[in-house]
Length: 141
Image 1 (cartoon, one colour):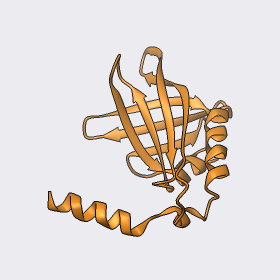
Image 2 (tube, helix red, strand yellow):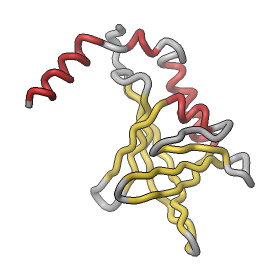
Image 3 (tube, rainbow, N blue to C red):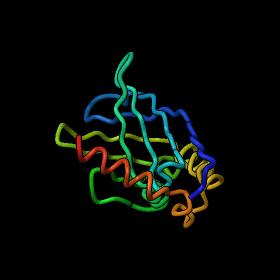
């Protein structure tokens, strides 16, 4: 377990795709926190003060930059017609959204996370005692 906690943040604009309408730009904040070294958070701006957060595996983002990845609520893949674009699909009980994002921006963000936590060393950053305490305290409330 490491004690030097780090949070990385990066802003981007993803294009929300919808049938028969022009793409809508959406502000997105990407976050990586060494307290959860296996995950990436994408926070989507939904209005003046609202954000919707999606948490998914850092490996899923890495895999999706080069090939189809994901078989659950989050799917990521390179665009078929443009190697500079990545398609991100999000599905939930309340709906489905498809975005296009810059492959280079996502790769740059991912590289920054690798500078902090090398792939394969995530376990060195996990505080098992803290995680168990958090789970137990949430279970009792």
